[in-house]
Length: 535
Image (tube, rainbow, N blue to C red; front, top):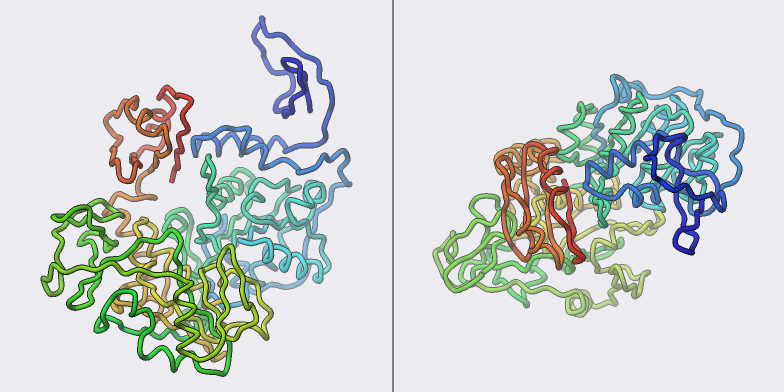
């Protein structure tokens, strides 16, 4: 609706009828009814999410609202599939749902069928392309599908609701189940405040509605392992759903600008078949390597990358621990930056193989039909026709992922391998993943070689508990131009640990999330912008 305030009409939502109001409250007439909005159930979910991630309720209600005015809804209905389903998929929805481990190249349609049998499911997928593909398959099965946000009115009146992150707040008439595909993907977290996570919203919504929630992933997150029971299919099926992984050990080669392509790489780029070379250059740490032995310098506590703050100390960007500026392998004090760049890499790669090389980043696309492509992980997120899929995917410098300063770096590295595996296909299809690294014995690579993501996830969960990282504790990261003033006014009570500043960022941790939220809310805010990201 719209109401006139201070001489102008502003939009808002009716969230309650006949509320108890203060005696001196001045009532203003409604100037216009704009149409249908979120249901009471979704409004309650928005209020919960705003509290859980320390944000403003209107921002979340705006996410849950239709993009255009909806004046009339269709007659309510329930879309339900009457055909058979695989027994293992049906079992995944029992007892409130589960976390289902499905190999990257395996077909996830049996999970969809099991959800369709329960009626009007909410299906969350990472990308718009995946949502449209899934909607087409649902329609071919004879059911009405609503793709969010365009089909908001259709979803509200009853349909199979399909969408990306924002669809966690979509209208669903009498939902029978909620499914989150690739629950491990970092795309599910909202980058703007409040930094809500669609997986956690889905779990809360399913519990409130009394319906099962199923999380699907080839590389389960430690948050999902802690939140819901595990439903693991046959181990042989998981192994068959991963392509072979080859590791090129680069420890004996000199680090630096001239060592981007190993001697053994050229033969792996030969025809036939398309090749994708992945080199992430944006938002990644610049690594240090020993000039004498080529060993990467890493943290002794969390295995993250370290950087040289001054001549006497190396600091870990992941956990903050320090160590002397010497190589732990040979004792040399001669360290060198490993500098990377896609533009130069493309030129060298073209000269190496003697043919044109295409390029794909988040902002550029050049020669997209070239047999050999180089780019960031945006290249892996492209949807390509099966006949144009990549037979070989090469990670030119996987250490950039393994040793990144984020707490979730290793989980994200494994997720990238799973994304590559989905492009290449199952083991029997003849594709492969090639990884260049100076850490060939890293646990992420060991798990990929064995096609065993669950063992890695359990190891990461144990590390998170040991390091007091989420989900063992609640964690808030405070940054922005007003962060320093915000932290000066923070009470810092018992039960809240403050770390930082590191790169003008502070971390607050507590085993009691409500205590952390209360202390954040008690700080008097100024006009300076402060970003608070909660995990």
